[in-house]
Image 1 (spheres, rainbow, N blue to C red):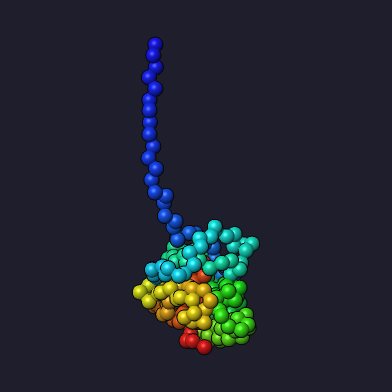
Image 2 (cartoon, rainbow, N blue to C red):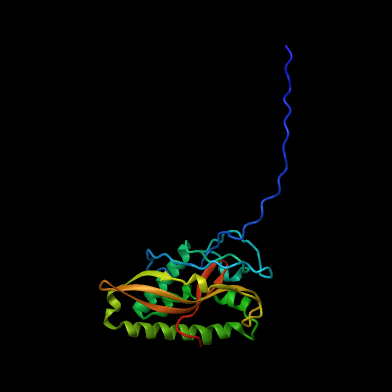
Length: 217
């Protein structure tokens, strides 16, 4: 009995293009925080050819501070649980009048040292930016008055049309990042929606962080 041999052929296609939308890790939220059901409308911006395009593997955020890792061009995502948790932590800081709850929502110091082309960026981060952040949290708590105990976090709104990639050297920065103005934290007091503004968010490795809460100082 003669057995025929089948001949097959394979075609070689073009390799798939690399994706810029890799999973990224966030800073760990405080142990005592309020995580809401919030969803954020986050911006979509076009990639700049001169911007970094490194795609990093997921980070174990219990062991590694993402601020110590290289920047990527990953776009902040509205599905990021880390972002919602961090903004819930910011809201808790306002309600409790305790800025320590909200440090996870602020742009990481190690990332700031990589980004800024200034002398002693760590000192600028601590004495200018974080000091203003803490003052703003105290002021927002005061504005809540006696309703602070009844306030409930609902969501974060981010105006996607205003977001863009900031190129190196535009804002005394050595490397780029996404930046958006005019986000809002929306909360409820006795069935009535209220909100406070978040003046500026910037990205690190595909996650939004606060850099200016109320105004620019």
